[in-house]
Image 1: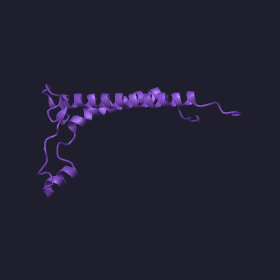
Image 2 (image 1 turned 60 degrees about the vertical axis):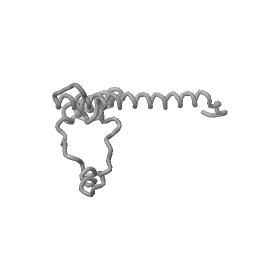
Image 3 (image 1 turned 30 degrees about the vertical axis):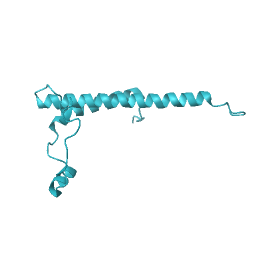
Image 4 (image 1 turned 45 degrees about the horizontal axis):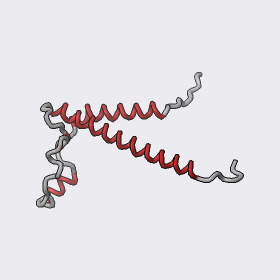
Length: 118
């Protein structure tokens, strides 16, 4: 009988797989999501809490309504907006993690060496 061992997955492979799955979900699954309001929006409408609501300040923006202005096919428009969202979120995450890493390196470099550590 063959022995089953756990395979080690590198961080890079894990990150690439995660990005691929996110892009697949954003482009293929998101356009088929329900356009009906979610529970919170429905309850607000049913209770009249949305009467004084104003349009969002970014309602006319390039990605308003989970769509890309100028793309007339709604499926493609939503998919492209999803890909842009994944890319923007990924870029923000990379910048934040790089900043934390740089701060830790600076802190470690400036910390005095401990006597007798070892």
